[in-house]
Structure formats: structure tokens, C-alpha cells
Image (cartoon, rainbow, N blue to C red; front, side, top):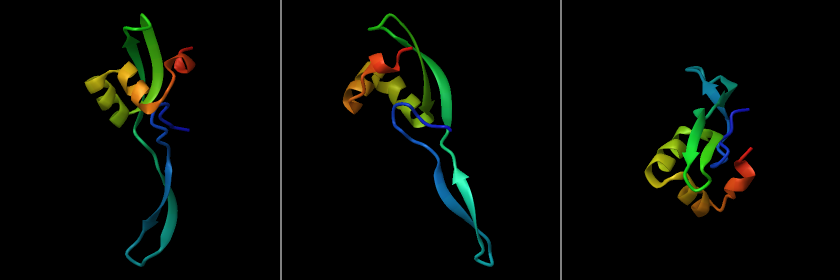
Amino acid sequence: MAKCELTGKRRLKGHNVSHANNKTRKWQHPNVQNKRIWVEELGRFVRLSLSTRAIRTITRVGLVTYARNKGIDLASLVD
């Protein structure tokens, strides 16, 4: 299942609603990408499944700062 490892974003259940108001179930999937990010503090690359929103934030503030603000331990994410 597509799930962001940092934000926890995952698929949501919704409905397709026709003009006749018929409802059929559907899943709305987040845009999750597999990325390899260099972490200067660890001196290595980290491979993560991230939502595009998380990628934009990491690009702006950095992975270590982002993880610290979210209360995530990077050591648990490293293989």
C-alpha cells in the first residue's frame, strides 16, 4: 500500500457520484515516491517512500530538521 513513511499519508476511501446520484466506492491514493536522500549528519543515503508534500518540505528545511520537528527518529528509518 502506498504510504508516506514520514507524514503517514495513505489512501482514503471516497465515492464516485454520478449525475443520477449513484455512489460507487473508490480509493484516493496519495502521490508517494521512492526517494534516495543524502543525510549529511549520518554521512550516507537514506531510501524512503515519501509523499510529494513531504519531499517539498524536506527540500526546503532538510531531512534532519523535518524529522526532529515531527518527532521521528531517523535511526529507525535507516536500513
